[in-house]
Amino acid sequence: MLGSARPGAAGLTPDASPPPPLKAESRDLSFHYGNGFKALNAITMPVHEHRVTALIGPSGCGKSTFLRCFNRMHDLYPGNRYEGAIVLHPDNTNLLADDVDPIEVRMRVSMVFQKPNPFPKSIYENVAYGLRVRGVTNKNHLDDKVEESLRGAALWDEVKQRLNEVGSNLSGGQQQRLCIARALATDPEILLFDEPTSALDPIATASIEELISELKKRVTILIVTHNMQQAARVSDYTAYMYLGELIEFDRTDTIFFKPGRKETEDYITGRFG
Amino acid sequence: MSDHTSKQFDAEMEAIRSGVLSMGGLVERQMARAIAALEEDEDAKLIDAVAADERAINQLQIAIDQQCAQIIARRQPTAVDLRIVLTVTKVVNDLERIGDEIKKVAYKAAGVRGSDRLTRIRYYDVVRMAGGAQQMLRKALDAFARLDVNEAADVVADDDDIDVAFNAVMRQLISFMMEDPRTISASLEVVFIAKAIERIGDHAKNISESVVQVVKGKDVRHATAEQIRAEVAGE
Ligand SMILES: Nc1ncnc2c1ncn2[C@@H]1O[C@H](COP(=O)(O)OP(=O)(O)OP(=O)(O)O)[C@@H](O)[C@H]1O
Ligand SMILES: [Mg+2]
Image 1 (spheres, rainbow over the protein chains, first blue to last red):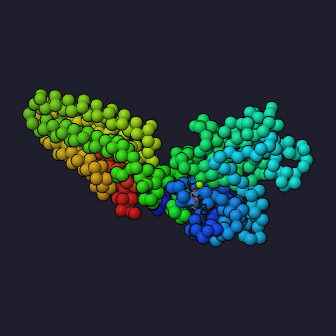
Image 2 (cartoon, helix red, strand yellow):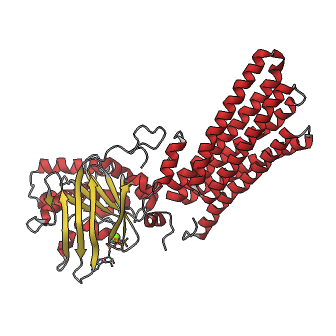
Image 3 (tube, helix red, strand yellow):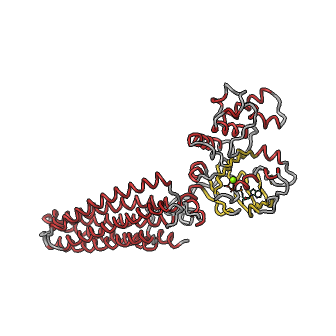
């Protein structure tokens, strides 16, 4: 590589600043569904702290499967099997270890889904839910946390007068922000987004993307998206997956300007077929 | 570089690529005419043709730039497509500037005719320089057409030769002018021609650097010929 080999080389693209510390990493992660299907094959990938990492790849390549490993969602179905590790830093906890409680994992790593899925409860209770599960009963504490989370999700001003209305009364974009507020309430370290804007119009999409850029100051973010431009807009790192394998991982600006692998280039330039 | 799922996208990319090549063809024709104007005696028709070429080149630049803007707006190109579109806008800009410089050469050629022998001796050096610039231009366009980074690296090295030739011509003209002030006016005309040719070499070099950027994804402007050779050689 130019620049790195000859530090004095004037005019050559300078090397990017050193990557931020790791928040998590998957090490040789493989995953088998209960029917025996191996959906992920030995994925090793870093997740940098306070950065957005986008997972892209054709339908069925295993993006959602990979994302769900990070909060042990697959545990909800019998027969699913992990191999390898997902290590959470700084405490070096292997999230997949048998002696780690999946409920605890989900407190530290929260998921926001494709379709907004508010509970059939009030806006307030939707956000307070995770805290109540944790045993928080103090009204003042709940109030503070609900407000803080709704502010964090850029929804507070729109709903502060109607906290007791049911969440499903909100617009699609507002519902999605409500789900983000719910995910934030337990102070997670990582937020997982699985195609969070695919059911939203462009304006609501833009506000969620804006929110994601804001949220990365507080949390580390992993996002699955089918929208390549969205990956390019919101993420700092991009992983390209194909058939359960990680084909390429790099800084987003590298992936979208000069990816290292031809497979990646073919996919992002629309030559896949 | 073809085979997008969208055939229309393929067609649009091919259109800007072949647009650059036809623009390059025009510039090469214009350059040949300007060199003929330098070498031969007064030929007003040649100079008119050079000026007409320049206008056609300007029109092509505008048309290709618009096509690039359309592709960016409608396709949001990435990776190699993005690099090609960005490069095409730069290359057509360089070609348009080359067209301007060539026009200057042709117009100034008329001003040098009939001047004294000593000035004319330097003038032949300038004609040789023009031949060198013409070669660089041909190679740069060829490198673009075939995305050939080795040929592109050669052009960058050639530019050093043109710069050396330019400096030699300048030094000699300066001593003429100091020795005999009556040569100043004719010498200055030759200086302007030499400078225009030197600029043509610079633009041909820019085009070649753009080719390296398309293929390698590295911005090699301001790098030395040696550094570019190393980059081109490295996989
Ligand atoms: N519950 C399941 N049991 C068995 N196989 C499954 C299950 N869920 C997903 N798969 C398979 O695992 C592979 C990866 O699926 P996954 O949902 O992770 O893909 P994806 O990349 O998220 O695709 P999309 O972009 O369409 O959402 C697919 O081949 C899918 O058919
Ligand atoms: Mg999915």
